[in-house]
Length: 323
Ligand SMILES: NC(=O)c1ccc[n+]([C@@H]2O[C@H](COP(=O)([O-])OP(=O)(O)OC[C@H]3O[C@@H](n4cnc5c(N)ncnc54)[C@H](O)[C@@H]3O)[C@@H](O)[C@H]2O)c1
Image 1 (cartoon, helix red, strand yellow):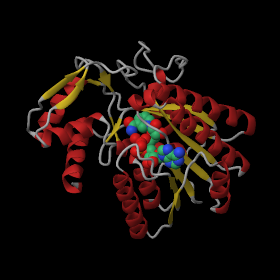
Image 2 (cartoon, rainbow, N blue to C red; image 1 turned 180 degrees about the horizontal axis):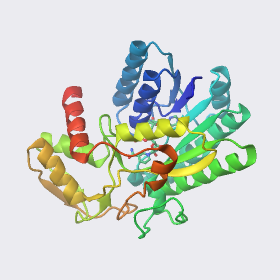
Image 3 (cartoon, rainbow, N blue to C red; image 1 turned 30 degrees about the vertical axis):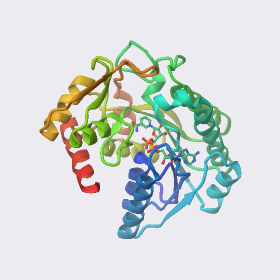
């Protein structure tokens, strides 16, 4: 287990804040970095940071938050060396498919250049482990399901997906050149408390509770492998603790459902029907995602535990207590 400080990039975000807290709870000191990108309400990110700070106090384990940009090469070198970082969980990114069509260069800068800066800092400091958050979006419109890690990913269908493919290839280059131990985790639609407000479950719950119509893109037959945040964080920590030198591993629920089924599940948990605002299918959106998680089972002894119904209930509980 990593006991020296771990650097969590994107610590103020959804997955980053949960990852930082889990590391602190088990006794690993954490340095978090985040530029509080205004992609969504910065007040949400500040609240996430306060939650991490309170977990740090309860656990009696040190947490240092740095407000800064991963595109700042000098800063990344300094952070890694001055804090004696031995592991990096790289989650900072411009996330979200749809916005990437409007800002492809911004996505490339943060998601590719930012990743290279961290890989450079990591290899110069000879760190023990680098975990990178990739995405199911790298599979594009592949029709072979479930998606397995050895499928080609040369046909991403959005600038966001292309930036994740590129970042994965840099991860491999740094592993190959410098023997940097790297695990790329392809995350499949993550949900749960603190989920990003632009994502479907968060929007559906908020809009239904506020008696507003929910935006439904396409005919509802698109398929997603929704994965609970607690399961994802366990997978990230398992990768961090493993002795894998290089690999790419899917983390998904292996329980894909259609958009129509998701809406029905949210209605059931809320005990309230949705009004639908029917919208066209969005360019860049994938038709389906479904993770083959055999490799995660084998290499990380990992498997998802939380059912969609339970996970949705956890999200609703959180939303009601936070608002
Ligand atoms: N949420 C999902 O369903 C999902 C699925 C697949 C992959 N991922 C990946 O997981 C990671 C975390 O996603 P999330 O849902 O928590 O998103 P998020 O937007 O909540 O978190 C990302 C954080 O990165 C920060 N950030 C952005 N640009 C930065 C920069 N230049 N310097 C420093 N910080 C910066 C943001 O301010 C944000 O707090 C991302 O890499 C994302 O691509 C997420």
